[in-house]
Length: 442
Image (cartoon, rainbow, N blue to C red; front, side):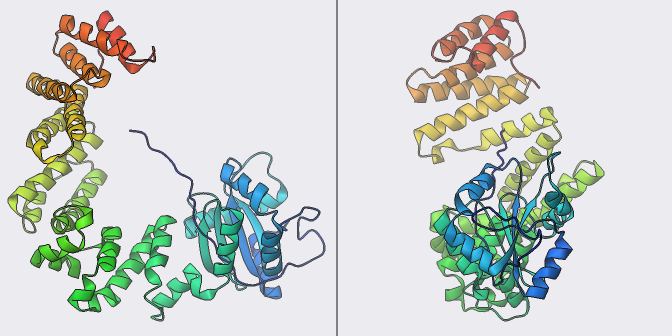
């Protein structure tokens, strides 16, 4: 599986200040935004407070291409320069280090670490905005076009739109609840999950759960709960309503798929009764007590759903432990239990059959598993109604692992002939078959 790291791309803040002059305080001679020079974070805060200026911090990195685009196309813009220079002390904070870093960059190394920890700066560019007292009032992230950045600055100058300010208002019990879902979404997307969950639960308990049932069950409110389902517990109203009136929840959230009420209950059950014991087992390096987990789960869902939840947990556990014997055992059970007739698309049926067959090829050495996988891939080939290199590759590898080399190689040769690229994985597997080498790793 490939894990792709995405740089953040989102929103900012501002509020009111003016640039100072003289000495080496600013980088002069350059058009656009004037950046503070040769000062540490404490000195910047002291100057901002003395001059009653807000602070704009651009968190960046030497390797960050979007940051360089901002430097080239956005910060030199006259409108943006006027907005920033007339209202802020502008500070560049580099979150990585290099041997070429100048004194200004080195002076803010400590601040960079503090921002990463305290304000969850997990991607660049990230924009932080502070009041003249040095208190965070707004955060955003991601490269912006000129118009977008101007809009964000204008919004950030408005205390009623500053996300950290709104959070403080919420904690103090003084907030327009119509604004809070947007703020929660911002913090969730900005990577501050703890703050997002804290405020989502506050919004749910103090506002949503106080509404009459018809308003609580409104589409927008239920979508909000689904988007923040990580926070949900069996003590929440959505849980009891999903159990007592599943048809109501299913009708409101029909676009999430059939049986969403049951999925809500399943999700909460997993979070409360499966995840904690598995995390504890990880720390102690012991096998989870599957019987104990089963007994806890069956108190909330029926025996069929209990078996399904337990099977998912076992697959997850043995995959993380790379115990492929047990993993393939439970995977075989999962594959056999899957009702492909419920999949309406022929292409999805083919994909699922091939996935089951290929995964068993990769992880199982059980002859019964491999023979069944061969049946599945043959079904996929029949459904496809034309030669497909991927399906033929799966079949050939299964035959080869079962010891039927003479049958496997002609099929693999046919799969290779259908490939335009000559050094594909299919060609590599073919060479291994001819040389009598394993085409699997586990």
